[in-house]
Amino acid sequence: MTGPDGKAPTPFARDLVALLPRLRRFGAGLTGSLDAADDLVQAACERALRAPGAFTPGTRMDSWMFRIMQNIWIDQRRARTRRGPATSEPDVLAALVGADGRRITEASLTLERVWGAMQALPEEQHAVLVAVCVEGLGYGEAAEVLEIPLGTVMSRLFRARRALGQALGLTAAAVFGEGGVGLPRMNGHL
Image (cartoon, rainbow, N blue to C red; front, side, top):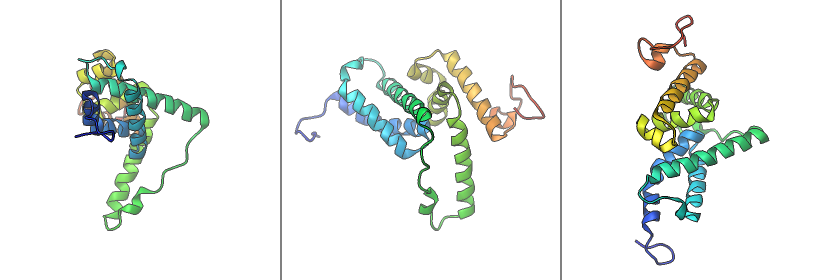
């Protein structure tokens, strides 16, 4: 396999390409949109390829790339807050001709509510929630990737899940399982 210049890709570039599906999934979790995720992945890859020497060989490239993506996403989110809300994306449901419209619409509305609630989370909680619940990282892996202590991952994840549950009107049992250990309860809700 050779690049457009006829040279074989470097091990760094090969490793980066192998990470692309995971980077895209992580980006989609952060942004709530595949198009925005692709833009975020592209920006992160451009940044990484401009400064490959910033990566420390022998460390986890996924952790390094997730950190780059998170930093870019935070910068973009803060810039958007200063500029005001962006226009909405085109209606995705138009592409679902022939599907069960009611089920698809309900699922889309639920997903929209969840994404909206996720976007309202503080950046730190949002990133942990995406790492664990979207990317599927274990708590220890998430701590390593986000470069925070394990206890901080657990605490932020708990607060993020509780906030999502409250925003979506879910009971503690629905969010944390029966018993909802350690959760304050008000009329059976979080």
